Image (cartoon, rainbow, N blue to C red; front, side, top):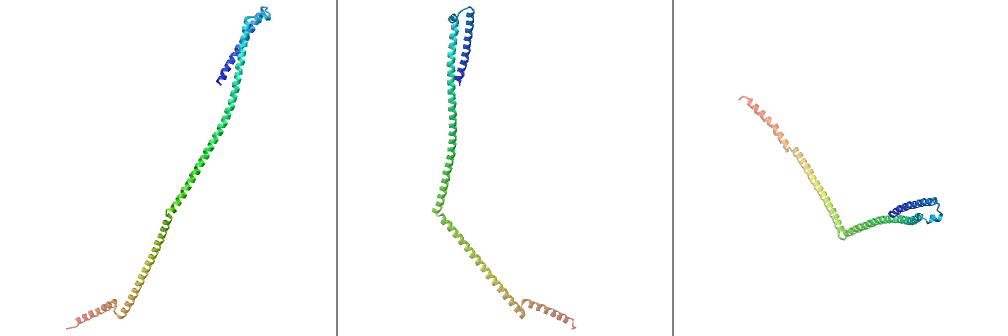
Length: 215
């Protein structure tokens, strides 16, 4: 683009120089014709030749510069098309890269998932191989055994309590029957006390009566 700009400025200058040479040639021709010079004499005049040579030189150089500018513009157009194509290719490449990144991420995720599944499977297999399953079963059996022992202990404790209650009831019935029998016989502790208490007033009254009698 800088080259095209420079050539454009040179073309503008050459056009001005060419126009100046043409104007000077016209002035020279008008002067010579005013002096009555013939056409051959005008063409043979040094000033006319000078202007003609300059004009032709400027025109030739101008044409050359203009052709160069056209070539550069064509190149620029081709470059623009090539750049556009490269831009499209780069955009496609960028999309392909993003797609590859996504596929790579999915592949990594699949690998990680597969590894986790394999580790989990190995862990489960390890539990079986290490005898963990047997230990868990032994613990379950022990727990069931302890529950059974506790149930038997509770049942035995309940049996002892029932036996004690039966003994207490039997003792109460025996004592009650014995007390009733003693009461009927006048052998109960409460009956003896009552009889003693009843006889004591009679003895006091008898003593008091005896003391009243004259001596």
